[in-house]
Image (tube, rainbow, N blue to C red):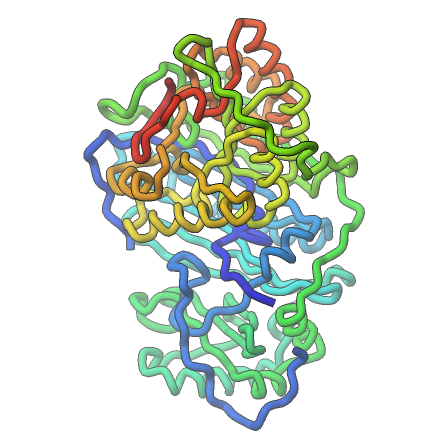
Amino acid sequence: MNRVRTTTVALLAAAFALGACTPGPVEPAGTTTPSPAPTISPLPPSTTSPAPTTSPFPDELDATGTVPALLDPELLAGMPLSVGTHTDNARRVFAQWPQVGRPTIDTTLATYVTGRVADFERDYPATGPESIAVPELNVGWHVLGSAPDAIGIVIDEFLNAGGSAAESWKTFWFDPTAGTVLSPSTLLDVARTDVALAAAVATRPELAGATVSAVSAPLVAFADDGSLVVGYDECEITACYVGRVTLAIAPDATTSLLTDRGVAARAATLHPVALGPVAMPTPTDVPTTPEPTSTPTTGPTDEPTTTPTEGPTGAPSAEPTGTATSTPSAEPSAKPSTKPTSKPRPAKRVDCAKAKCIALTFDDGPGPYTARLLDELRRAKAPATFFALGQRVETYPKVARRIVAEGHDLASHTWDHRDLTTLSATDVRLQLTRTADAIEKATGRRPTLVRPPYGATNDTVRAAAKKAGEAVILWNIDTLDWKTRSTPSTVKAATAAKRGSIVLMHDIHSSTVDAVPQIIKGLRAKGYTLVTVTDLLGSPQPGKAYYSR
């Protein structure tokens, strides 16, 4: 099986990425932001570790050492997964975790991730618009292996404290059938594993003097060849500048270190089997904080406010505060179809210089509710624009294909929702190209539009978008659906849009999907024509930022 090294996927792919993305302050033009930085048969006896390799993607489980195997997205796409999400726009928080319908697994993952978020929000209070460096927390996930008796998930975290940045891991292995957590000591003969790890350290000059233990390692996984891969976070066993470190034990040596549970975990990695569906609880999608009493604002945050503008001017405005957590289960039992009901609709060009046009846009999908949203749009014959995360396109390729087949715009929202203004030019380009590649693979078309997470953009981002052939699309109406999770509030905010508006919403929230029929009816009653962003703008130019027509 071809294994793809996916980014924080945040879930079973990078995948389960659900969450809201409300852009924060947008920089005035010209400003710059500093970059942060087979069944395994015993082989001839050997204690030599495979030569260290480096992940091909700077943001993907990268480490000095061997990269662990990740579940093939094609298999991942067939699993009955959904994603839980926590977002806090004032603090630049985008966290997601997979939910597989097994209580022990779901509760353990949700508790861990929401605990990390709580720690971040306690340690880094919300900053005002005058702040130069805005802390950021991005939590994603990857599936390491999957089988009826073992599933491995690694939570991949990026923390930018404003002046320094660090990446960290947390591995969880479970027995899905028994509903138990499998600790390193249940997978490995710890004493013998520690001896093997010490021998591996001795072959790595940069790790001289490091003390290692399998029990305390945040990453316990396997490589494509069956090697045991044990990883440590930055600064944990050696100098911080070395970054995250992995140690690998050759396949034959690994075999002698594994318990029966460990053998099952390695088999789940090398010969994965998609988990089958189980009885799932009714999906929930509610806010964890009271609905704000303030009127929705407009203007980009990762989701904008109300007075149409034609690009950032003057000092950035304050970003709305608030958090929202959603822990949806898999899609409802009456599943909407993910297949197009017809051949691609011919493009219906609307002259928005004459018609009163408005563009409805949806971020952060595809997700569990996107198919139902497409059903509503089809019934109303209303086009829309979807700004999708590359990880989620890779997880829901059939839904991505349906979006395009039914005449909507499918655009980029980057790979894993990182604040692009904190990345190097190379990493910004990677975020765009990986997402464009995923969209093209799923649909046959490359995107021509991109919406930066949090609405955060600068010269580097715009230059990368121009090179990628993508116009930068922000918004001038932010419904705050990510924050209120209220259908009435979302309807009220969206129907306040004016001619030429770009309306920001998220298809990962059931409350938003519930609001769409009323939004369409309300806007049409006022004489507005709903169009895609491409039709609204006519011929949007690559690299240029647009908030409205």
